[in-house]
Image 1: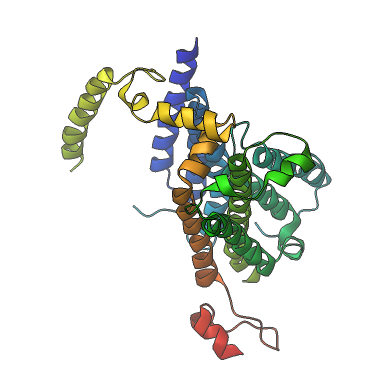
Image 2 (image 1 turned 90 degrees about the vertical axis):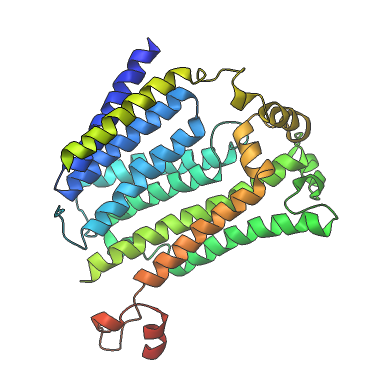
Length: 81
Length: 152
Length: 112
């Protein structure tokens, strides 16, 4: 039962990473990156590394998103490549 | 991102429901860092996330006046100093740097009424220093990134 | 360029997936990573520190010097953010100094 959940989480992890890379709108990319961080935190918690999962959830899915959006809103919103 | 929001629902949910819960959970993670998963770094990140959430809803005018950058820089420096002094005190007592085993903390067991080794209490002191440092640095980063938005 | 990337990366991914079958199971007590120094750390925590959280014991006591450097790195990052993004004080008429002199310690000391 556990490995199916982990497989689904891992699929969402890879999917959100690909979406974050392919989006042109940087704020949407930051939202996808937040999903990536949360999936990584859930996977780490399932592996038993709860300390790392706490850090990943608080920093990766919480603070980093706010800092990214703050940095993006003082420059151009769209990526050029 | 830095303007004040007047929505009653937003203010109630953030100020009454979320932020106090996040603060208490962060302090729980700090204090129970020795017994359950957690520690200074995680607690600092959680409490800083709560404060950033409060500042996002309160806006730039009200947010920064309560905990200014000067106070935060002092707090971060105090955290680092706590860590360094906790390392230096065992050197003065004849052990090596950061060897908490010889810290003069036995009296605390009599006051608090539980059995803890010196090393466990040294770990807690160090974690408190890490907490202050990480918390202040994260809030400083948020303040100065959004300062540009509110000034222009 | 795209097909070259695919030609390089797909065999690499296949190789990594093939090799990962030989890795020990997660949490295997007989894995090489769990045989060398982990038993000593567990014994040291039970004997000297007496706290349940092994991770905190290793991070803050056994590897205390490492964590001190980590905290100093974070502190330095905060100071760097302050120095790069901090603006000088407002002038008497309420305006900020102009754009190319508005940040950094030299601009602030000149304003005083």
